[in-house]
Image (cartoon, rainbow, N blue to C red; front, side, top):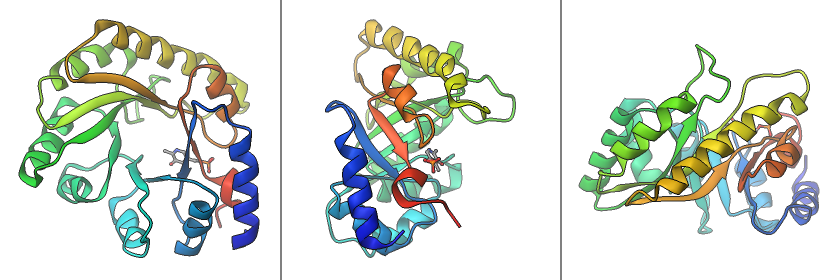
Length: 221
Ligand SMILES: *Cc1c(COP(=O)(O)O)cnc(C)c1O
């Protein structure tokens, strides 16, 4: 889509979201110009799947927006990620949380992070199985420079987005369970779930961040 079309389109979609739901642009493959259009439309969170791509776009953006890592974070990219991102949504092991914490100590900053849940319990997908979330969050709560502020899930690939509802619902259950533990240094604020074809369902099931790409910018070429 062209600049003007993106601005109008995003404003229209944003106006339909409940006030407690944050719109995150999943910006993979989008040009700097398209990102600028999203900023003009009021988007303030940009999610990237790769450290490198976020870096190359961010150098061209002067506006103060928030940059989120939404792809699998490789351990050898942690240092760069800590320098670039405001939030990492894809913490899926204690080891990774520790590495992020250690880099944050070196950089003299702290990092908000979400734990990624493999809600479909798929063997080849990233993210923790729902039953493993509590022990990771408990352990991560002892780290000084990373703070768990919620959960993120993708859900399995399904034919009909309605089939994602049980996975979103289970992720929300885990979210509520962790919140009720009242762990120190853990703030269950964000539940990041839902993409272009499923965000309405995700919102019905409790999402507070929706990650939208196609519906904002048009299909990826
Ligand atoms: C690409 C992507 C999205 C958005 O997908 P669309 O179907 O284009 O809305 C959301 N989350 C993640 C992790 C992505 O990689």
